[in-house]
Image (cartoon, rainbow, N blue to C red; front, side, top):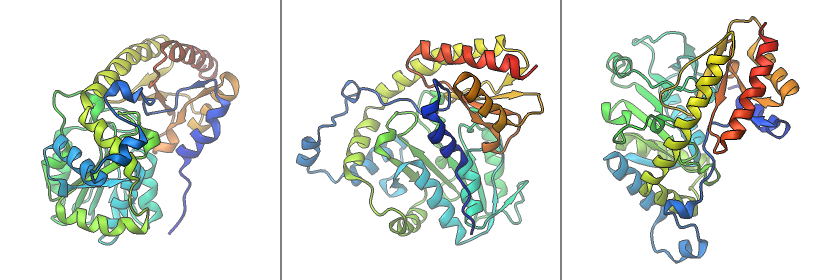
Length: 345
């Protein structure tokens, strides 16, 4: 078992304080929760007679139209990724994780001793790991493709889909890949990105009842119980989801137009044109490595972006547009455009 770095995490953590223009944060900022109908007063929490975990399970279950027995709360989305991979490590050491992809979807199975298959092989691949929307492209997964992976996998297989950014598609009704096949599909989500509640560290896994039992058996070895106060706040946020949807949609739709103008006016780059995320993958055709390019952008224009190498891709970077301050985004993109105009000649 190796211990690879979570390069994306450390890149952002180490460099955020150095950057004037942060274009690396993929989650929305925390809103004024009182405006969202969420009570945060700790004395009100202490006075509540609710079982916070059970209340949270019910809130998520009602949102998805599933049973509370299908839900396991986790400490953010990262614990969910680790738990699912740890659970599957008891059954297989083969995983298919198509790239580009969110770094922990690749590094966690590698750390646990999985062999990462380059192509999907139904005869030996028991774990398939995806992100929807894809991180870093921001593109929604094709239902036809996902169905082909589910149908092509064996009865003991697990198709794991991290749905962290799926809600940025702003569909008319909330949905989850879990409903496509409750025996094979496992999904996870978090309140960190769409809801902007990163400080509360609340996530969850949705799976069949038997898988939830097995995952719950593993959880005490990692973190034990989740913080009751965070679950109490999280349940309220989910029940007031419509307010968070309105806020997220307003921010993302406005900012995407600004980014589109940046792409059109900046020579020698392309983009993934995201349909369901507050970020995109910017690509370029110069031979310089993405990590070197991003480091130069930080040094020369104080712009922080995330190298495509951290997502298993080349010659590109993830650009996030989660800004509530429109002018801050515009200024950051101006500085980035100046840098790219010089660097990609």
